[in-house]
Image (cartoon, rainbow, N blue to C red; front, side):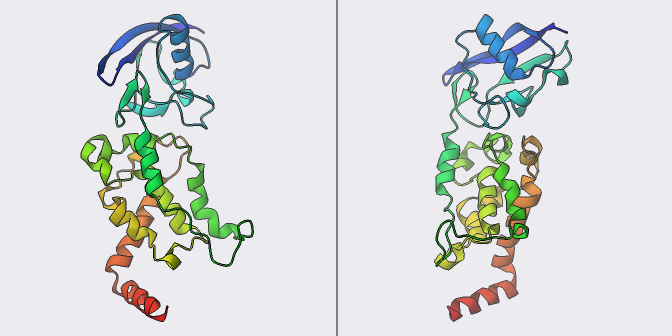
Length: 255
């Protein structure tokens, strides 16, 4: 079954823009990205949109569809009624380059600020051995495709531009949690406590666990429950639990 859908697509650049109306053909089984491509081919040849795999694995086609951060290639037209207006806008949290393309360099800056995995001493690369039970907790986080939808929907930076300098966002706090759970990460041996660093250097305290990041994750990663809350708990334990504080003192003295 084919029908004519009413699309509203944001057109513009860093200087400003507007929503423009289009009537576009929709066929069975199509996704929003299909319609955007048809719009490019038939009515708006200069429409800028970023995409790559069209399989929900590259994270390139992130946008906001009817106000919700989504991957356009994974948003089926069947979730909308033929009478419904489908509004497509760029991710609001990041500066617009043109049309649906945004400048996501903020995320790469934050990625560079997260200390990398610290290999254990005396074990050469390729000789690491871990039991599956020890990596199960952090393995979930490796599914991240870096679509940055979680970063886009996080109100800490979405509604407060001034927080961007001190807040890494859920994607990179999850990266810190992953490293903190890694059975071979030897950060503590070089004086780096990852949970404390998350709090002091990457703004973990700004997160108030609304779970909006989890709700928009296309890989269904439980970012809040499995990464951010445990990271917060470890940061609080290390700072305020007297037994943990005493144990850290004893360990440092023995070292």
